[in-house]
Length: 145
Image (cartoon, rainbow, N blue to C red; front, side, top):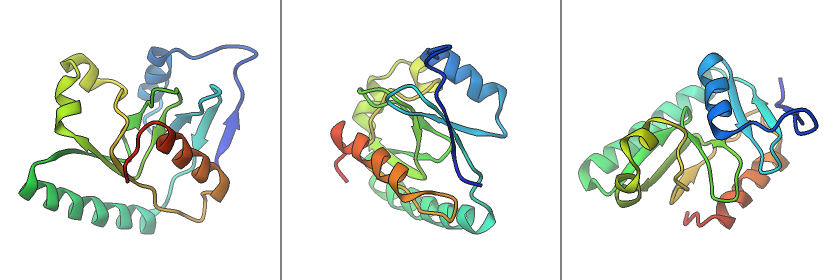
């Protein structure tokens, strides 16, 4: 299955809170939002892809346990860069300094952070162009690596 993009703008523009509630109400599905406000239904990766992500995240967390420089995130985290949109990344981290500037309430909702580092693993279900667009959005918003 490839991702499905729904343009809801003629009917509704989801607020950040509405998007968060949509994600909470459908935890068995993965949603993203483009800068233009389109709703993206992201297909499941499958066992092999999830295994790769688990290995990758384990290595990143092991490194961070030693350095304690960053806050790490997995693919269930949805980031909201300043330009808008909401994207899940396979693995990401942000400086602990930025994380600590968020209120406890903000830390529990959609992340207002724009990560310093991210990893997006390609899968058979991911088309290359939407992944490139997602990466460009993050580069435009201060992604370092």
